[in-house]
Length: 122
Ligand SMILES: [Zn+2]
Image 1 (cartoon, rainbow, N blue to C red):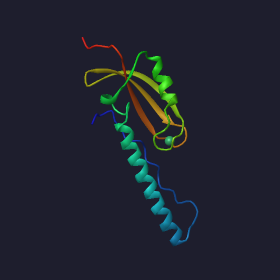
Image 2 (tube, rainbow, N blue to C red):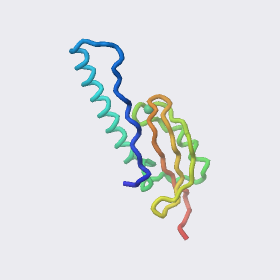
Image 3 (cartoon, rainbow, N blue to C red):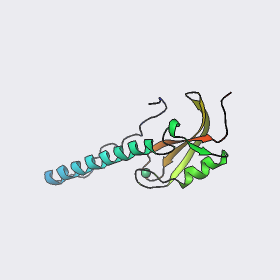
């Protein structure tokens, strides 16, 4: 685990309209299932290419970061990701490019890691 890996904010529980007890129980079960699914998909995404610095996606030029971030769907809801920040960082001694993205649909945030091909450590 790297300290830069943060969990996305969890959606808060909402109790807006009054419901019958049965409906409420059902809704809670659905919410739990949804949350579990989101957590599982999130864990899966962390093990996919670009999900962590060790699994950085190799690119030939920094301009590919934005192209890649835009063409990647949200792993949780398949929504479109918006690039909030494109940073050059050194993590565990490795120079990486980090695309910080936020889903335009479910608002989950994540980072996608890239490594420039041909960069050597001096
Ligand atoms: Zn999403």
